[in-house]
Image (cartoon, rainbow, N blue to C red; front, side, top):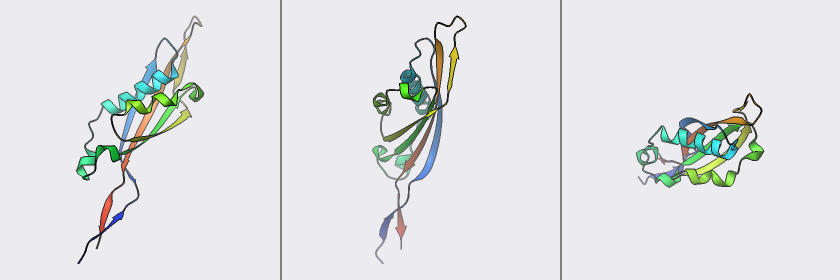
Length: 124
């Protein structure tokens, strides 16, 4: 009997979490980049290889919580990923801590990366 391949819906396989800061410069983009790196560098994923897929096929849903999403240069964020296809969503969140002397603020961003993979299944 001939085996048929069917594409399955993308199912989340891995969640990664990270935090990034901009202590002095109030750089919202830098805080987001650091949060993404923090999440990525906590793990070494072999998910794609387990399912016999190229790493580039991994889809990465990125949710970033940052106090001022409108201040983030989203064009710089995909460059952080060594492979995969990131889809980035910014939401109001994280923290902005004003300095006591009023000279600025420290910014904290939170990242959640959800990795999924389009997989094929055998349909007999």
